[in-house]
Amino acid sequence: MAGGKASNVYTLDYNEEIQSDVDATEPSLPISQSKSQNRTTQELLAIGRDRRPDATTFQCEAEIMSIRTKKSWYYPACGNEKCKKGVTCKDGQICGKCKKGVTCKDGQLWCYTCNKHVSYRRSRFKFQVDVMDATAQIVIVMWDETALELTKSSAKALLDES
Image (cartoon, one colour):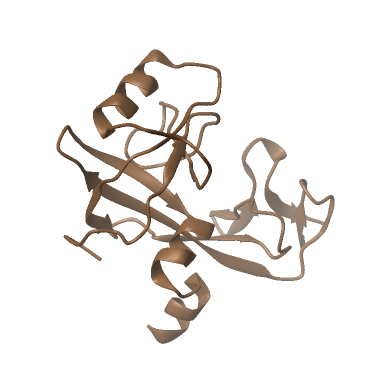
């Protein structure tokens, strides 16, 4: 994948905050596939700097330069197929940020989004990807659905192989 062109074109929506080790205090741009306008990575940076509250979707053809693996490339999430909330561990305890993820309740995993006990955690992709076009090089976060399409494998399958 590093240094090769991605076979698909992905769009970037500026409509919510997600976490990345790039700059955790700044909003980042989740990837989704939808109809959009053609733009450059430089234009994406300008949209991000403007902090526009409206959803802006566009297509940007860029080369994947590398996938950052120093920090984790996956995260453990709620096992419910439709829920994507992550599970984090702190001092051996399971906890959720702002009580909105999966946390430990009565000695069991509890998902506040699903409002029920979680019997198992599901591994989901969270790639931090360096991409570049002729105008700029940026880091994007590629979440599970997009990474599944790119890798043709699940995070769990890759973890089981290692």
